[in-house]
Image (spheres, rainbow, N blue to C red):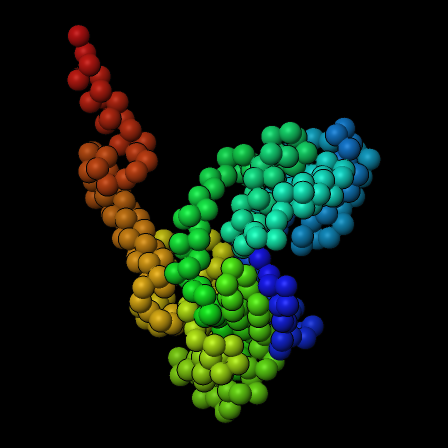
Amino acid sequence: MLHHDVRFDGWDVRDWQRLVSALRRPPSRVADGAPTGGLFVLHDGAHVLKLLHSAAGRLPGAGGRLRPLPELCAEHHARWGVSLHDGALEELMERIGARASRRDDLVDQALSFVATAQRMGREGAIATHPAELSSLRVPSAEMLRAALSRLLPDGKVLALGLFEGGELFTALVLRRRGRAIDLVLGPDELRARMGLLSGDFRRDYRFLAAAIEELAGPIGTGVFTELATFRELFVSPPPGAWARAALVRDVVVVPLAGAALVPIAVDAVRGAFAALVRATERLDPTGRVALLSAGAPTPRAASVLSSLRARLFAR
């Protein structure tokens, strides 16, 4: 996953904190009283040893009877949860280490982690909510390598740049060399090479891109936007949101071609499909059109489908 002589350059504590904060769910997307954050449960099989909420911190409840994870998540207003048998993390690492080889690349290690976690999930050592690990569909190694090669070709970099208040808020640059990442570059060194900024990220991202190419190499895929926009799009965006943002240049993708264009095009199709479903639900009084346009029938469409089945198979 990481090269044996990987370099971490251009980072300080503040920039790491900024990067983590950019990935958090924005308060504007959390309804009052709605579940938020995640719940971690450590247990011995019968009793709770520790309860930790990602937003609220340590919770009382140690020593209590172990209950189903969905029930605990609902009680503590958590959107998701992970339940671990005492010693499960150590065992997970040991199993992954036993299977690891020096020839393993990023894809090999990721698939090994998921496969081992799924196996321990079936054994009851690890549980997740709302989706079980065993139900997670994992693409093949060939598919992942092909996607990675298009997104981050050998010798090029994957870049994320976030702006706020006319300044570079944070940035993350990953450079691939061979089968591993050999450089993780932060914003500290990039800021010094960007010069004076205009305050409009649509122009300023060019200075950031030039600094990245000077320090790390050619950009394979780059995403540049404002912090607020990224936060809104990163967590559960509605269908078509990324495509609309790219169209009006609220998000700048470099280069806007090839592999970088594929997810935007897919998101645009999702947005068009969702709009079609909403339109048919409003305008179609019988539900017949919804049968053709929607992947999952609405109750009205399901009623029409049941009626058609009864007529077709009536004796």
